[in-house]
Length: 157
Image (cartoon, rainbow, N blue to C red):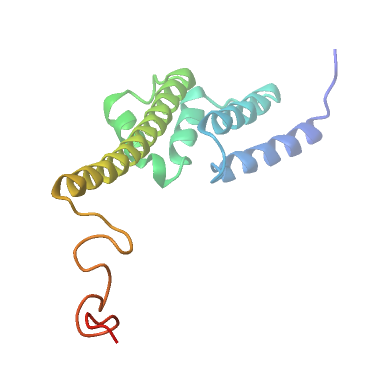
């Protein structure tokens, strides 16, 4: 059995509490990694004898996610009893939300690419049907200022 110096434990706990208070999700961090960091910090505090509850950890997680998650946090707060909410419940909701956002972003990119592709084809088909073509030297006038007045003359010199 390891005997811990109460002063050392108190200092470590104070440092962990400060870290917990200052905890925020990083711009480049995934939701799952952030949840893991919050849980790890809470577990470290509990292992040193702190009485931090799961409700406190859940509350901290929801408060520190940042503006991108405001609508999800509000939905969770409105629909669930925060005193009974577990980290597993919150984690599942947040990861599912992030997956939905990524799926919607992928779908939107796919739709834009498809619309661009279809639009390009439609213009080409329509022009061919009308007999209109682009390019140099084709069509009625064969380019600028050709045919009448300038350039070639019809009389033989």
